[in-house]
Length: 452
Ligand SMILES: Cc1ncc(COP(=O)(O)O)c(C=O)c1O
Image 1 (cartoon, rainbow, N blue to C red):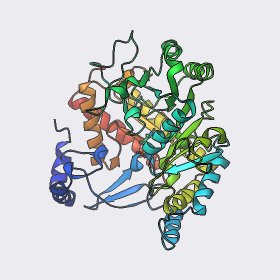
Image 2: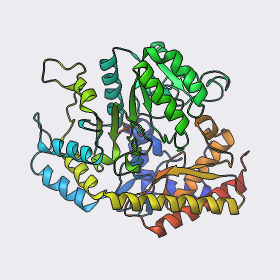
Image 3: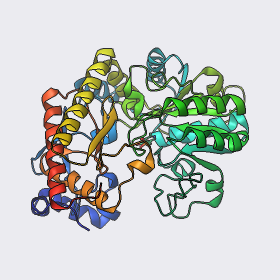
């Protein structure tokens, strides 16, 4: 069903973006690789970005709250990043040799996050998670991993299991979460080797880890997973994980591809986690492609190739390319303690304003999140885990309506109505975002109320 508001459809169909889409779909299946920002009948095409705004091909200005899937901590064309890229590009963009930019970015990560004594770079968060899983397997000699139901960690087969499970296949609440394939054709062995964990049921979590622990190489964990609901993992579950890792020799992978931004030192210190591997991406590349596995030198030694073949070899033609490294350095230098604190305050302001206005208006909707990350839910019931965050069909359609309506109002958010703030934003940006979200929710509710 096409849920784009009628007025937006007219604007979009007659636009330069519409023509760009018609041209693109002849040579690209679906018209674009940017599938996660699909808007029916077609997405707006970006012409340029500056600070927290995007201008599309038709000259519309959009407040960018998606920030290329939360990777642009300073918004678009951040001058120090642009300058760094210009300087480095003039000296060569990729070498079959190391550059010092790689070392400098690894040093910058260690300064912020002392647990991350060493870092290995790659080109995406997907690769980072894959490399960390392989590292854990290499260190433990075990094949299986565990991950939380609904969590997104990129598109490595094992990390994708149960990413999109639903009430028809996720198993009875009284049973353990099922290992559900995400991609058609997922090998059954991948499902057998991926144990799925409940996010907000520490007792069941303990039972599963007690049973499966001896065969697990790693637990893969994002402590504020957006797809789970953008709610923090509880202290009880963290205690269970810590105990199981110690008891069974399971390694812990903390996926901070998104949540590294939550504090100057990343997410693991906030949640009192001591992971064996931390996976990074997005903001540490300053807007260019990047991924990284970091951690204590003792676990990172698994990737060391200098004493014969590494236990786990990870390569990549463009890994640690000087452009991504220099751009990341410039972005991280400007994301200092003061910038982190200010951005987190903006996030608190957004959630407080939006939630108060939704409550005052009597809309069954609420916003979750932490720091500069937010997500809208179309319910006023507690959001604890993937299942309580999972929208039914009516809510899903309403979310699509809201995303389209927000675009019409000049705000870009993701399809599940989540987003991330960027440092060029001010109180007034955040206040207008909160007001627009509340107006969009009201409009959707008035046109087709969803069950609460
Ligand atoms: C928590 C998490 N891990 C891994 C990834 C994969 O990163 P990338 O898109 O750079 O492959 C993502 C992407 O959104 C993510 O949110």
